[in-house]
Image (cartoon, rainbow, N blue to C red; front, side, top):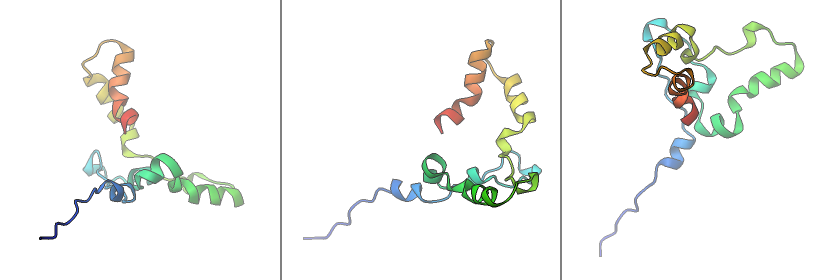
Length: 105
């Protein structure tokens, strides 16, 4: 009788592993936003990536320097280019085609 290793399901490991930051435009040298590098559990359920901001806001007034950077996917130039390049004519379908990744992910 030979021993056979049980197959592993690595989906449980992916839930607690931070995501890899891939900038939209590497030439911009953009800093990763906390929601771009947090774990999927933190992103969808616990929101640990904003805990430090909430704790700091409880004890003092927050300024603009305290806020984390916006994700590089929120840049207006990028959204305008996607809107212009969209193949849809109607506004609703055009907006849905632009946000389908955010809706699904």
